[in-house]
Image (cartoon, rainbow, N blue to C red; front, side, top):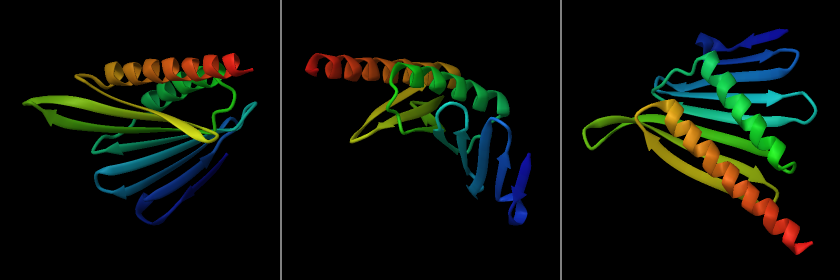
Length: 142
C-alpha cells in the first residue's frame, strides 16, 4: 500500500492491491475522486462532487454498480459521475450525471431526486439501457 499526499491534503493517491484511488480537492466545494481498478481489466471511474463529501461507502456502491455495467459491454474505456445538491423549486434535490465512454462514442444521463441513491440508481439503469441498445445494434450489423 502506498499513500501520497500533497500540500494541505489537497491531493492524495492511495495504491491498494485492487484499486488506485486518487483524491483531489479542487476548491472548498469541489472534490474529485478517480478510481482505477487493477483486476482483470482496468476501469477508470471519475467522481466529481460539488459541495458534497463522498464517503467510502458511496464510493464502493458506485464502483460496484459501474462494474456491473462493465459486464454488459466489454469495450468501455471510462466512467464519469458528477454529483451536486441543488435547490429545485424550493426543494433540495440531488442531481447526478453519468457518462460511459466507449471507443468513438459515449452515453450520458442526468437525473434528479430527493436522495442521492435514487438519482444514482436511475442514472445507472438509464446507462444500462443505452448500452444494451448499442450492443443489440452492433449485433444486428454483424
